[in-house]
Amino acid sequence: MKQKHRIKSKKNLVIIGAQWGDEGKAKMVDVLTEQVDIVARYQGGSNAGHTVVTDGKKFVFHQIPSGILHEGKKCVIGNGVVLDPIGLLEEMGSLVKAGVKVKDRLIISDRAHLLMPYHRLLDGASENRKGSGKIGTTNRGIGPAYMDKMARVGLKVVDLLEPAYFRRKVREVVKEKNFWLKKYFGLPGVDADKTVDAYLKISPQIKPLVADTTAYLESRLKKGENILAEGAQGTLLDVDFGTYPYVTSSSASVGGVCTGLGIGPQWLDEIYGVAKAYTTRVGEGPFPSEMDEDFGEKIRKRGGEYGATTGRPRRCGWLDLVALKYACRVNGFTGILLTKMDVLSYLQTIKLCVAYKVKGQLIQEFPASLRRLADCRPVYKEMKGWQGDLSQASQLKDLPLEARKYLDEVERTIRTPIQWVSVGQDRSQIFQKS
Ligand code: GDP
Ligand code: IMO
Ligand code: MG
Image 1 (cartoon, protein in one colour):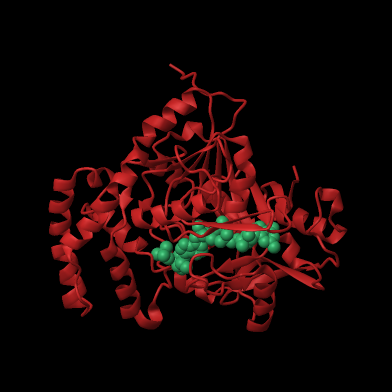
Image 2 (cartoon, rainbow, N blue to C red):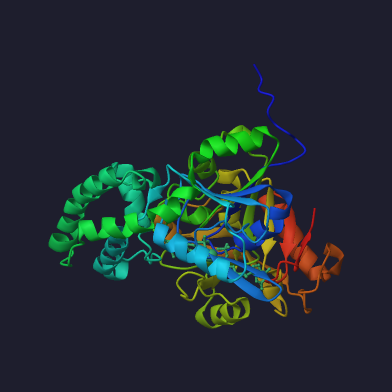
Protein backbone atom coordinates (compact mmCIF):
# COMPACT_ATOMS: atom_id res chain seq x y z
CA MET A 1 0.00 0.00 0.00
CA LYS A 2 1.38 3.40 -0.96
CA GLN A 3 1.77 5.71 2.02
CA LYS A 4 -0.10 8.98 1.70
CA HIS A 5 1.85 11.08 4.09
CA ARG A 6 3.70 13.51 1.86
CA ILE A 7 2.57 17.07 1.56
CA LYS A 8 4.10 17.99 -1.76
CA SER A 9 3.65 21.72 -1.39
CA LYS A 10 6.19 21.89 1.46
CA LYS A 11 9.47 20.37 0.48
CA ASN A 12 12.01 18.88 2.83
CA LEU A 13 15.46 20.22 2.10
CA VAL A 14 18.93 18.87 2.71
CA ILE A 15 22.01 21.11 2.79
CA ILE A 16 25.33 19.33 2.32
CA GLY A 17 28.88 20.59 1.96
CA ALA A 18 30.07 19.68 -1.53
CA GLN A 19 33.78 20.25 -0.83
CA TRP A 20 36.04 20.05 2.26
CA GLY A 21 33.71 21.94 4.61
CA ASP A 22 33.23 25.67 5.29
CA GLU A 23 31.42 26.17 1.99
CA GLY A 24 28.97 28.62 3.54
CA LYS A 25 26.38 26.01 4.54
CA ALA A 26 25.17 28.00 7.55
CA LYS A 27 24.43 31.07 5.47
CA MET A 28 22.33 28.95 3.12
CA VAL A 29 20.59 27.23 6.04
CA ASP A 30 19.78 30.62 7.54
CA VAL A 31 18.36 31.88 4.23
CA LEU A 32 16.31 28.73 3.54
CA THR A 33 15.01 28.39 7.10
CA GLU A 34 12.25 30.81 6.08
CA GLN A 35 10.83 28.00 3.93
CA VAL A 36 10.76 25.29 6.61
CA ASP A 37 9.40 24.55 10.08
CA ILE A 38 12.30 22.58 11.56
CA VAL A 39 16.08 22.68 11.09
CA ALA A 40 17.95 19.51 12.10
CA ARG A 41 21.64 18.68 12.43
CA TYR A 42 22.29 15.03 11.57
CA GLN A 43 26.02 14.40 12.10
CA GLY A 44 29.30 15.82 13.33
CA GLY A 45 29.54 17.79 16.52
CA SER A 46 31.41 20.82 17.78
CA ASN A 47 34.03 20.38 15.03
CA ALA A 48 31.57 22.36 12.90
CA GLY A 49 31.85 26.14 12.77
CA HIS A 50 28.81 27.57 11.02
CA THR A 51 28.72 31.32 10.46
CA VAL A 52 25.63 33.46 9.94
CA VAL A 53 25.90 37.22 9.46
CA THR A 54 22.81 39.36 9.76
CA ASP A 55 22.78 43.17 9.87
CA GLY A 56 26.49 43.18 10.62
CA LYS A 57 26.07 40.80 13.57
CA LYS A 58 28.03 37.57 13.38
CA PHE A 59 26.97 34.28 14.96
CA VAL A 60 29.07 31.11 14.89
CA PHE A 61 27.26 27.85 15.64
CA HIS A 62 28.99 24.64 16.58
CA GLN A 63 26.24 22.30 17.70
CA ILE A 64 23.04 24.34 17.53
CA PRO A 65 21.38 24.28 14.09
CA SER A 66 21.90 27.47 12.11
CA GLY A 67 18.14 28.04 11.84
CA ILE A 68 17.95 29.14 15.49
CA LEU A 69 17.95 32.85 14.59
CA HIS A 70 14.47 32.48 13.08
CA GLU A 71 12.04 32.75 15.93
CA GLY A 72 9.21 30.25 15.77
CA LYS A 73 11.27 27.58 14.02
CA LYS A 74 12.25 24.42 15.89
CA CYS A 75 15.79 23.08 15.93
CA VAL A 76 16.71 19.43 16.36
CA ILE A 77 20.04 17.81 17.21
CA GLY A 78 19.68 14.34 15.75
CA ASN A 79 20.94 10.95 16.92
CA GLY A 80 23.83 11.04 14.43
CA VAL A 81 25.49 13.96 16.21
CA VAL A 82 28.09 13.44 18.95
CA LEU A 83 26.97 15.89 21.59
CA ASP A 84 29.24 17.84 23.91
CA PRO A 85 26.63 18.82 26.52
CA ILE A 86 28.84 21.33 28.34
CA GLY A 87 29.72 23.05 25.07
CA LEU A 88 26.05 23.06 24.13
CA LEU A 89 25.03 24.87 27.30
CA GLU A 90 27.75 27.47 26.70
CA GLU A 91 26.51 27.97 23.15
CA MET A 92 22.93 28.31 24.34
CA GLY A 93 24.05 30.80 26.99
CA SER A 94 25.79 33.08 24.51
CA LEU A 95 22.78 33.02 22.21
CA VAL A 96 20.47 34.00 25.05
CA LYS A 97 22.89 36.82 25.93
CA ALA A 98 22.66 38.00 22.35
CA GLY A 99 18.88 38.16 22.70
CA VAL A 100 18.02 34.97 20.78
CA LYS A 101 15.11 32.99 22.19
CA VAL A 102 16.23 29.38 22.61
CA LYS A 103 13.76 28.12 25.22
CA ASP A 104 11.29 25.53 23.94
CA ARG A 105 12.90 25.57 20.52
CA LEU A 106 15.76 23.09 20.81
CA ILE A 107 15.20 19.33 20.91
CA ILE A 108 18.02 16.82 21.42
CA SER A 109 17.85 13.18 20.43
CA ASP A 110 17.94 10.73 23.33
CA ARG A 111 19.99 8.46 21.04
CA ALA A 112 22.76 10.96 20.27
CA HIS A 113 26.13 9.86 21.64
CA LEU A 114 27.87 11.94 24.25
CA LEU A 115 31.25 13.47 23.72
CA MET A 116 33.27 12.88 26.87
CA PRO A 117 36.37 14.72 28.14
CA TYR A 118 38.56 11.68 27.45
CA HIS A 119 37.60 11.84 23.76
CA ARG A 120 39.14 15.27 23.52
CA LEU A 121 42.30 14.14 25.32
CA LEU A 122 42.65 11.11 23.07
CA ASP A 123 42.12 13.22 19.94
CA GLY A 124 44.96 15.56 20.91
CA ALA A 125 47.22 12.73 22.05
CA SER A 126 46.70 10.75 18.86
CA GLU A 127 47.43 13.79 16.69
CA ASN A 128 50.60 14.58 18.64
CA ARG A 129 51.80 11.03 18.32
CA LYS A 130 51.26 11.06 14.55
CA GLY A 131 53.54 14.10 14.25
CA SER A 132 53.88 15.18 10.61
CA GLY A 133 51.44 12.41 9.61
CA LYS A 134 48.66 14.05 11.62
CA ILE A 135 45.15 14.52 10.22
CA GLY A 136 44.90 18.09 11.44
CA THR A 137 41.67 17.52 13.35
CA THR A 138 39.77 20.27 15.12
CA ASN A 139 40.85 18.66 18.41
CA ARG A 140 37.24 18.41 19.60
CA GLY A 141 37.34 14.66 20.29
CA ILE A 142 35.14 13.80 17.32
CA GLY A 143 37.10 10.78 16.03
CA PRO A 144 37.39 9.08 19.44
CA ALA A 145 33.69 9.70 20.16
CA TYR A 146 32.60 8.02 16.92
CA MET A 147 35.14 5.23 17.56
CA ASP A 148 33.40 4.49 20.85
CA LYS A 149 30.00 4.55 19.19
CA MET A 150 31.10 1.94 16.66
CA ALA A 151 33.02 -0.06 19.25
CA ARG A 152 29.81 -0.15 21.29
CA VAL A 153 31.30 1.45 24.37
CA GLY A 154 29.81 4.90 23.84
CA LEU A 155 27.42 6.68 26.16
CA LYS A 156 24.22 8.19 24.90
CA VAL A 157 22.23 11.23 25.96
CA VAL A 158 19.59 8.88 27.38
CA ASP A 159 22.26 7.28 29.62
CA LEU A 160 22.91 10.66 31.20
CA LEU A 161 19.35 10.56 32.50
CA GLU A 162 20.02 7.32 34.43
CA PRO A 163 22.66 8.42 36.98
CA ALA A 164 23.49 5.02 38.50
CA TYR A 165 23.94 3.39 35.10
CA PHE A 166 25.89 6.40 33.82
CA ARG A 167 28.36 6.24 36.70
CA ARG A 168 28.85 2.50 36.40
CA LYS A 169 29.39 2.67 32.66
CA VAL A 170 31.78 5.65 32.77
CA ARG A 171 33.87 3.93 35.47
CA GLU A 172 34.10 0.86 33.26
CA VAL A 173 35.01 2.76 30.09
CA VAL A 174 37.50 5.04 31.84
CA LYS A 175 39.53 2.00 32.92
CA GLU A 176 40.32 1.31 29.28
CA LYS A 177 40.74 4.98 28.35
CA ASN A 178 43.23 5.45 31.18
CA PHE A 179 45.17 2.45 29.99
CA TRP A 180 45.61 4.15 26.60
CA LEU A 181 46.21 7.62 28.00
CA LYS A 182 48.79 6.48 30.54
CA LYS A 183 50.48 3.47 29.01
CA TYR A 184 50.37 4.34 25.33
CA PHE A 185 50.42 8.13 25.29
CA GLY A 186 52.28 8.68 28.57
CA LEU A 187 49.67 11.18 29.80
CA PRO A 188 47.82 11.50 33.09
CA GLY A 189 44.54 9.61 33.10
CA VAL A 190 41.09 11.00 33.86
CA ASP A 191 39.12 10.69 37.08
CA ALA A 192 35.93 8.76 36.29
CA ASP A 193 33.93 10.07 39.24
CA LYS A 194 34.88 13.70 38.64
CA THR A 195 33.81 13.30 35.02
CA VAL A 196 30.51 11.77 36.06
CA ASP A 197 29.91 14.48 38.66
CA ALA A 198 30.49 17.24 36.11
CA TYR A 199 28.06 15.64 33.65
CA LEU A 200 25.39 14.83 36.23
CA LYS A 201 25.59 18.42 37.48
CA ILE A 202 24.45 19.75 34.11
CA SER A 203 22.04 16.94 33.30
CA PRO A 204 19.01 18.75 34.81
CA GLN A 205 19.58 21.51 32.22
CA ILE A 206 19.84 18.98 29.39
CA LYS A 207 16.94 16.76 30.44
CA PRO A 208 14.06 19.08 29.39
CA LEU A 209 15.52 19.26 25.87
CA VAL A 210 15.71 15.49 25.36
CA ALA A 211 13.17 13.58 23.29
CA ASP A 212 12.77 10.72 20.89
CA THR A 213 13.45 12.92 17.88
CA THR A 214 12.53 10.18 15.41
CA ALA A 215 8.98 10.18 16.79
CA TYR A 216 8.98 13.99 16.95
CA LEU A 217 10.09 14.39 13.34
CA GLU A 218 7.68 11.76 12.05
CA SER A 219 4.73 13.38 13.79
CA ARG A 220 5.62 16.84 12.45
CA LEU A 221 6.19 15.53 8.93
CA LYS A 222 2.87 13.71 8.95
CA LYS A 223 1.17 16.93 10.03
CA GLY A 224 2.52 18.58 6.89
CA GLU A 225 5.42 20.46 8.44
CA ASN A 226 8.76 20.35 6.68
CA ILE A 227 12.38 20.09 7.70
CA LEU A 228 15.76 21.25 6.57
CA ALA A 229 18.59 18.81 7.32
CA GLU A 230 21.77 20.78 7.98
CA GLY A 231 24.97 18.95 7.14
CA ALA A 232 28.28 19.67 8.81
CA GLN A 233 31.73 19.24 7.22
CA GLY A 234 31.55 18.24 3.55
CA THR A 235 31.50 15.35 1.09
CA LEU A 236 35.28 15.24 0.73
CA LEU A 237 35.53 14.91 4.52
CA ASP A 238 32.93 12.11 4.63
CA VAL A 239 34.30 8.95 6.22
CA ASP A 240 33.27 6.84 3.21
CA PHE A 241 33.58 9.19 0.27
CA GLY A 242 36.20 11.66 1.43
CA THR A 243 39.97 11.73 1.18
CA TYR A 244 40.41 9.02 3.81
CA PRO A 245 42.14 9.08 6.29
CA TYR A 246 42.15 12.90 6.04
CA VAL A 247 38.45 13.02 6.79
CA THR A 248 36.12 13.41 9.72
CA SER A 249 34.55 10.35 11.35
CA SER A 250 30.93 10.73 10.29
CA SER A 251 28.70 10.49 7.22
CA ALA A 252 28.62 14.08 6.05
CA SER A 253 26.96 13.13 2.76
CA VAL A 254 23.32 12.36 2.03
CA GLY A 255 23.23 8.87 3.59
CA GLY A 256 23.95 10.46 6.96
CA VAL A 257 20.60 12.27 6.87
CA CYS A 258 18.55 9.09 7.24
CA THR A 259 20.82 7.39 9.76
CA GLY A 260 21.41 10.63 11.66
CA LEU A 261 17.78 11.69 11.96
CA GLY A 262 15.82 8.45 11.75
CA ILE A 263 13.64 9.42 8.83
CA GLY A 264 13.17 7.48 5.60
CA PRO A 265 14.65 8.64 2.27
CA GLN A 266 11.18 9.15 0.78
CA TRP A 267 10.93 12.34 2.83
CA LEU A 268 13.91 14.00 1.19
CA ASP A 269 12.87 16.26 -1.67
CA GLU A 270 15.69 18.64 -2.52
CA ILE A 271 19.33 17.75 -1.91
CA TYR A 272 21.38 20.93 -2.17
CA GLY A 273 25.15 20.88 -2.38
CA VAL A 274 26.87 24.02 -1.13
CA ALA A 275 30.10 24.88 -2.92
CA LYS A 276 32.37 27.89 -2.88
CA ALA A 277 33.18 29.47 -6.25
CA TYR A 278 36.71 28.29 -5.43
CA THR A 279 37.87 25.62 -2.96
CA THR A 280 39.27 25.64 0.57
CA ARG A 281 40.51 23.00 2.94
CA VAL A 282 41.66 23.08 6.58
CA GLY A 283 43.91 20.37 7.92
CA GLU A 284 46.14 17.96 6.08
CA GLY A 285 45.61 15.87 2.95
CA PRO A 286 45.96 16.16 -0.83
CA PHE A 287 44.39 19.12 -2.61
CA PRO A 288 45.04 18.98 -6.39
CA SER A 289 43.80 22.48 -7.26
CA GLU A 290 45.59 24.22 -4.37
CA MET A 291 46.90 27.67 -5.33
CA ASP A 292 50.52 28.64 -4.87
CA GLU A 293 51.42 30.27 -1.57
CA ASP A 294 51.22 33.93 -2.72
CA PHE A 295 48.00 33.63 -4.68
CA GLY A 296 46.45 31.46 -1.99
CA GLU A 297 47.26 34.15 0.57
CA LYS A 298 45.56 36.78 -1.59
CA ILE A 299 42.34 34.73 -1.78
CA ARG A 300 42.58 33.83 1.91
CA LYS A 301 42.68 37.52 2.81
CA ARG A 302 39.87 38.49 0.45
CA GLY A 303 37.66 35.60 1.47
CA GLY A 304 38.47 35.79 5.20
CA GLU A 305 39.51 32.15 5.00
CA TYR A 306 40.25 31.36 8.61
CA GLY A 307 38.55 28.47 10.42
CA ALA A 308 35.37 29.40 12.32
CA THR A 309 36.16 26.77 14.99
CA THR A 310 39.94 26.76 15.27
CA GLY A 311 40.97 30.03 13.61
CA ARG A 312 43.44 28.11 11.44
CA PRO A 313 44.21 29.59 8.00
CA ARG A 314 42.36 27.68 5.29
CA ARG A 315 44.28 26.40 2.30
CA CYS A 316 42.87 27.93 -0.90
CA GLY A 317 42.54 26.52 -4.40
CA TRP A 318 40.63 26.90 -7.66
CA LEU A 319 37.22 25.33 -8.11
CA ASP A 320 37.76 21.61 -8.66
CA LEU A 321 35.04 20.34 -10.96
CA VAL A 322 36.32 16.75 -10.90
CA ALA A 323 35.71 16.69 -7.16
CA LEU A 324 32.43 18.62 -7.45
CA LYS A 325 31.08 16.22 -10.08
CA TYR A 326 31.96 13.35 -7.76
CA ALA A 327 30.12 15.08 -4.88
CA CYS A 328 27.08 15.52 -7.17
CA ARG A 329 27.12 11.80 -7.87
CA VAL A 330 27.47 10.45 -4.34
CA ASN A 331 24.82 12.81 -2.97
CA GLY A 332 22.46 13.01 -5.93
CA PHE A 333 22.38 16.80 -5.62
CA THR A 334 19.27 18.33 -7.15
CA GLY A 335 20.92 21.74 -7.10
CA ILE A 336 24.06 23.65 -6.19
CA LEU A 337 24.19 26.71 -3.96
CA LEU A 338 27.31 28.60 -5.00
CA THR A 339 28.86 30.93 -2.45
CA LYS A 340 31.61 33.56 -2.40
CA MET A 341 31.38 34.62 -6.04
CA ASP A 342 32.25 38.13 -4.83
CA VAL A 343 35.69 36.94 -3.67
CA LEU A 344 36.74 36.14 -7.26
CA SER A 345 36.11 39.67 -8.59
CA TYR A 346 38.94 41.74 -10.11
CA LEU A 347 41.06 38.79 -11.26
CA GLN A 348 42.36 38.81 -14.84
CA THR A 349 41.98 35.05 -15.20
CA ILE A 350 40.05 32.47 -13.24
CA LYS A 351 40.88 28.80 -13.45
CA LEU A 352 38.53 25.85 -13.35
CA CYS A 353 39.99 22.41 -12.73
CA VAL A 354 38.27 20.18 -15.31
CA ALA A 355 40.45 17.04 -15.18
CA TYR A 356 43.57 15.62 -13.56
CA LYS A 357 46.77 14.38 -15.11
CA VAL A 358 48.51 11.46 -13.41
CA LYS A 359 51.75 10.16 -14.81
CA GLY A 360 50.87 11.51 -18.25
CA GLN A 361 47.37 10.05 -18.18
CA LEU A 362 44.27 12.27 -18.26
CA ILE A 363 41.59 11.28 -15.73
CA GLN A 364 38.19 12.70 -14.87
CA GLU A 365 37.26 10.51 -11.93
CA PHE A 366 38.08 11.43 -8.34
CA PRO A 367 40.51 8.65 -7.29
CA ALA A 368 39.95 6.37 -4.30
CA SER A 369 43.67 6.01 -3.70
CA LEU A 370 45.16 8.87 -1.76
CA ARG A 371 48.58 8.17 -3.26
CA ARG A 372 47.06 8.58 -6.71
CA LEU A 373 45.20 11.73 -5.68
CA ALA A 374 48.46 13.17 -4.35
CA ASP A 375 50.01 12.54 -7.77
CA CYS A 376 47.16 14.27 -9.62
CA ARG A 377 48.06 17.51 -11.36
CA PRO A 378 45.16 19.79 -12.21
CA VAL A 379 44.18 20.44 -15.81
CA TYR A 380 42.72 23.92 -15.97
CA LYS A 381 40.29 25.66 -18.24
CA GLU A 382 41.08 29.37 -18.04
CA MET A 383 38.20 31.81 -17.96
CA LYS A 384 38.33 35.59 -18.30
CA GLY A 385 37.80 37.27 -14.94
CA TRP A 386 35.30 40.06 -14.26
CA GLN A 387 36.11 43.57 -13.09
CA GLY A 388 33.30 44.68 -10.84
CA ASP A 389 31.92 44.45 -7.35
CA LEU A 390 29.28 41.73 -7.08
CA SER A 391 28.25 42.35 -3.49
CA GLN A 392 25.10 44.29 -4.45
CA ALA A 393 23.92 41.87 -7.15
CA SER A 394 20.35 40.75 -6.51
CA GLN A 395 19.64 38.92 -9.73
CA LEU A 396 21.54 37.08 -12.42
CA LYS A 397 21.31 40.09 -14.75
CA ASP A 398 23.35 42.15 -12.27
CA LEU A 399 26.41 39.97 -12.78
CA PRO A 400 29.01 40.92 -15.40
CA LEU A 401 28.97 38.75 -18.52
CA GLU A 402 32.18 36.95 -17.51
CA ALA A 403 30.70 35.97 -14.15
CA ARG A 404 27.61 34.57 -15.87
CA LYS A 405 29.86 32.64 -18.25
CA TYR A 406 31.69 31.21 -15.26
CA LEU A 407 28.43 29.95 -13.75
CA ASP A 408 27.37 28.50 -17.12
CA GLU A 409 30.64 26.64 -17.46
CA VAL A 410 30.34 25.16 -13.97
CA GLU A 411 26.76 24.03 -14.58
CA ARG A 412 27.61 22.59 -17.98
CA THR A 413 30.48 20.54 -16.59
CA ILE A 414 28.81 19.18 -13.47
CA ARG A 415 25.41 18.81 -15.15
CA THR A 416 23.62 20.10 -12.08
CA PRO A 417 21.80 23.43 -11.90
CA ILE A 418 23.13 26.25 -9.75
CA GLN A 419 20.09 27.42 -7.84
CA TRP A 420 21.35 30.15 -5.56
CA VAL A 421 24.34 32.45 -5.85
CA SER A 422 25.79 34.12 -2.77
CA VAL A 423 27.74 37.36 -3.18
CA GLY A 424 28.64 38.39 0.36
CA GLN A 425 28.55 37.37 4.00
CA ASP A 426 25.26 38.98 4.91
CA ARG A 427 21.95 37.14 4.85
CA SER A 428 20.72 39.65 2.25
CA GLN A 429 23.60 39.16 -0.20
CA ILE A 430 22.18 36.32 -2.23
CA PHE A 431 19.86 35.66 -5.16
CA GLN A 432 18.05 32.75 -6.71
CA LYS A 433 19.44 31.82 -10.11
CA SER A 434 16.97 29.19 -11.25
P1 GDP B 1 30.07 26.56 6.92
O1 GDP B 1 30.89 25.77 7.89
O2 GDP B 1 29.88 25.82 5.63
O3 GDP B 1 28.77 27.04 7.48
O4 GDP B 1 30.94 27.83 6.55
P2 GDP B 1 31.81 28.75 7.56
O5 GDP B 1 30.90 29.57 8.36
O6 GDP B 1 32.82 27.93 8.27
O7 GDP B 1 32.66 29.59 6.52
C1 GDP B 1 32.07 30.32 5.50
C2 GDP B 1 32.50 31.78 5.63
O8 GDP B 1 32.19 32.47 4.44
C3 GDP B 1 31.77 32.51 6.73
O9 GDP B 1 32.63 33.48 7.28
C4 GDP B 1 30.62 33.19 6.00
O10 GDP B 1 30.14 34.34 6.67
C5 GDP B 1 31.28 33.53 4.71
N1 GDP B 1 30.40 33.60 3.52
C6 GDP B 1 29.34 32.82 3.20
N2 GDP B 1 28.87 33.13 1.99
C7 GDP B 1 29.66 34.15 1.52
C8 GDP B 1 29.70 34.89 0.30
O11 GDP B 1 28.94 34.68 -0.62
N3 GDP B 1 30.68 35.84 0.20
C9 GDP B 1 31.56 36.10 1.20
N4 GDP B 1 32.48 37.04 1.00
N5 GDP B 1 31.55 35.41 2.35
C10 GDP B 1 30.62 34.45 2.51
P1 IMO C 1 32.06 22.75 8.96
O1 IMO C 1 30.78 22.07 9.38
C1 IMO C 1 36.17 22.29 7.62
C2 IMO C 1 38.33 18.82 9.15
C3 IMO C 1 39.51 19.06 10.06
C4 IMO C 1 40.37 17.86 9.71
C5 IMO C 1 39.33 16.76 9.52
C6 IMO C 1 39.08 15.89 10.73
O2 IMO C 1 32.30 24.06 9.63
O3 IMO C 1 32.18 22.80 7.49
P2 IMO C 1 37.75 16.25 13.02
O4 IMO C 1 37.95 17.25 14.10
O5 IMO C 1 36.40 16.26 12.43
O6 IMO C 1 38.17 14.86 13.40
O7 IMO C 1 38.80 16.70 11.87
O8 IMO C 1 38.13 17.41 9.15
N1 IMO C 1 37.06 19.44 9.58
C7 IMO C 1 36.52 20.50 8.99
N2 IMO C 1 36.98 21.29 8.00
N3 IMO C 1 34.95 22.50 8.14
C8 IMO C 1 34.46 21.70 9.12
O9 IMO C 1 33.20 21.80 9.58
C9 IMO C 1 35.27 20.68 9.62
N4 IMO C 1 35.12 19.75 10.58
C10 IMO C 1 36.21 18.99 10.54
O10 IMO C 1 40.13 20.28 9.75
O11 IMO C 1 41.00 18.08 8.47
MG1 MG D 1 32.68 25.96 8.98
